[in-house]
Image (cartoon, rainbow, N blue to C red):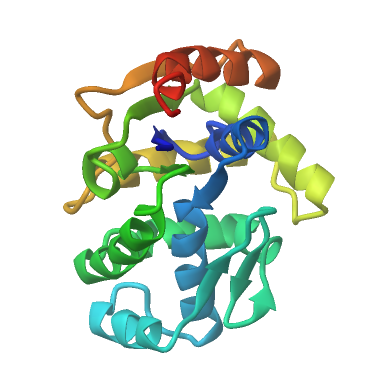
Length: 223
């Protein structure tokens, strides 16, 4: 029987990058829950739906198909939006829609259904506390706002996205942190049984190795 691994943490902590690499090592499937909120935000923005009008956003979601492919690409109603959902404006909008209780309920239900089969690594902001409370391994990944801003800047440059300066990105990350930690429903916080991993001074390889080390005792029980 395979296990599920939950990775929570603030924006730009490297959750998705680490989750994808771990999935390759373990032969697991990555479920990027943040991408689902980004898709919701992107579609709302495209359709000029106010992000604070919960009923309208929920109605939009009823006819929305979000597909997360095993290789990491993200499809919104059949369109590959893997790059579009990473724009800074969409990132902030995703934080806004994630505050909506019924939007969260809709997406959480989809995430829980996906994970029933086990063998998933799911990352987001409320995985260990709400979505997968029974996950065998729970990680809380964090890093300083400055370290995360540097990573986001590099990621944006490599992806050819519109590039803000470092100071602006750092302020946006701090604002996103505050929003995520103070929202009324499912605020970002470390689960009581999660292990914190500060990646500020760790390489990607070191982070993967650390989480693999934490998960190893549970992985040995799979067979």
